[in-house]
Image (cartoon, rainbow, N blue to C red):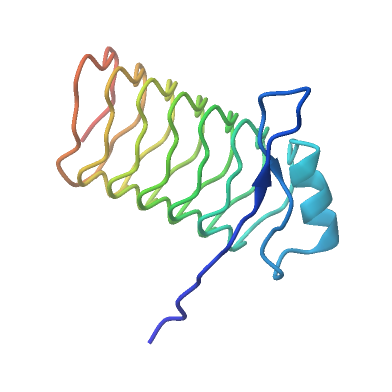
Length: 167
């Protein structure tokens, strides 16, 4: 039986900004990772296999990071930058990726079941073998994406799809 994670977060809204600030993070995260999250930059980080299930990570820069086999299920990843990021075999089930930049991201065999990718930039992303069952791709940009052996029935509405490679 797999471990069930219940994560509690407390948020405060500082009077001088409209941004939420995380006051408490999962105890399993290293102090270094917590510090990087608070600085909003994990650019080029090695996060292979990290468990960030349900964590609020809106607007963080993950460009060129290695998130191979990471668990990001239920994570809030809206407006994040995943440009040229490795997300191979990552668990992104039910993740919120609204407005995220996944240009050139490596999502081979990633699980995107019911992930929300509304208005996401996925140009030239490699989704080979990915699970796209019920993935929401409303107004997303998939121009030049690679969809070899991708499976499932995504929700596609006003999605840019010119130059998609699919075998």
